[in-house]
Length: 427
Image (cartoon, one colour):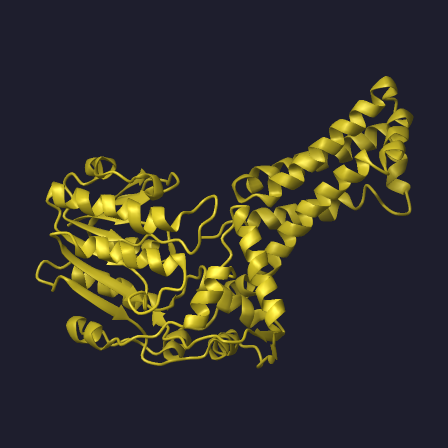
């Protein structure tokens, strides 16, 4: 079978891609960024939020037997549009499927959007579902609860990060969760790709038990092999401030799960009735604890959990460091910098050199703050740090003997830049 897979590099989509290839299907994978080609897959770069006409999709539907849509975004930002991804883009895709004669469409939505839609995420997910149900297609809509698996992204990654904290913060008014396993979700999608599988079904895909968020975090902590952590209930104002901070970080192009949409969805909870799903597919949803402890946690997974909240701290410190050095050089440190340049023989270029170095530092700090430019800014930080070491050694070798160690302190910054580059990828 030849399958068009939307959102092929996402948390669910990448797992579906692996299962499709394992079942010897051919895949046309729609992604927003260019991917390395691999056997059995043809990657197509397409921004779903801008593919709002059937003509944008028709060229990619030639020879396709079925479509699987796993695309989704949590919250609007400069990089993401909930309406574009969940409604306008997929509505055009469904219309194109009708025109191209591609009847089987499996669409991944979210649990509870038919009952309560407090956010643009859930409202647009529901609108996307309705757009598909209005089409003359053999559709199946899957509404999973919170999905976890061996990989981690978004909320499932946050659970691990919270488990690594020495004190577990509790946010009030969190609803119950019926956590479902990623393998169960991918197995379901492959089931409905079969020619004789039932169609025109809307199914809630949820785990067998309702769990509190704190219990999920403590279970992860137990899995990592760490003793139970003390829990502290956060004041409402503090938890709201954290989610607002996540919104601000989202404006820079990052995708933290702790944003205002995440808060509202957590309050709602994620529960449903998996009975019909299990009856139709024969899949018995696995218990969260049993699935987790079926395989031991690796040291790499412990590293990931412990680095989860350190990552924004590292990037934030680096961005502020470079911004601060530039601003200080232009302000109270200008005369000192000018004197050092004159001592090193810069002469009439002393002032220009200080200003140029300060502006470069400020540009690097701003570049690190924005997700789109962070990698290149970190490379620039490495390059300019090495330049400062070489230039300082040649022009002012006495700086190596300074008691505050201005030259020696460059090396920890270099190391922190390398760490930031190593952990920059989200998935």
